[in-house]
Picture (spheres, helix red, strand yellow):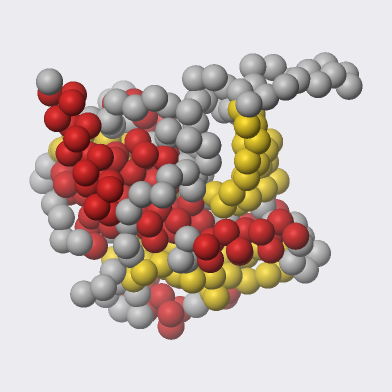
Length: 313
């Protein structure tokens, strides 16, 4: 069966500047090596990498009618993402970020939420979602769990596999805000800090299990340079990250989500899916932006196999 994924939620236009160690004071200027821009966000960024890996991808959400929205649409289309489910809003700008990238690949952010905050369950393309094999909700905290479940629950009734990734830092208040939707998620794909913050747990494993107790089917946690941990009621699977020269960590979580979901769609095991997620993240981390790299599924699998062999030598 062809894997058809609807990525629904946050669509952001990122501008990356590298390298930046400090913002010049007053009217000062600084020379940098690179400035680029591209699509990002937990829906759009995930959509791009899923499309690269061979999934059929439709993306849904809200953007403005501004030139930034025009660019975002054009770039998503270039990667083979179907943008027909995106809504365009008058009077509100497309969500955007400016990211000063440090030499070590980390980055602060200047962010405008924009049109992302206007999307509601009434906007969701319920019939189109029901025709998909997977629904990935990027940033459910933007609408809250009570509203997110209005999208997730019908999808699951239709047999659609559901997943979500988070934008907000984790804390117990966010967990309470999301709680109504958790039992409608087959997979939750947070990062380590989010899991620990949401749960208040002292270990990642116990934090993931606390989320399972809330009804999530599987928690696949990204751990930065330490790879990923996949936890279900029956198992815990740790997968190491691949050693790469990191240029920019922007979009690595979205790339992991895409690789993990693509692996599941191909019928791979949780471990194999997490390996593909880590490979996609490693490829994206080597350049600027969520859309870095012209890889496909074969290239990602080859990268994973070759890098794993090098690490064992």
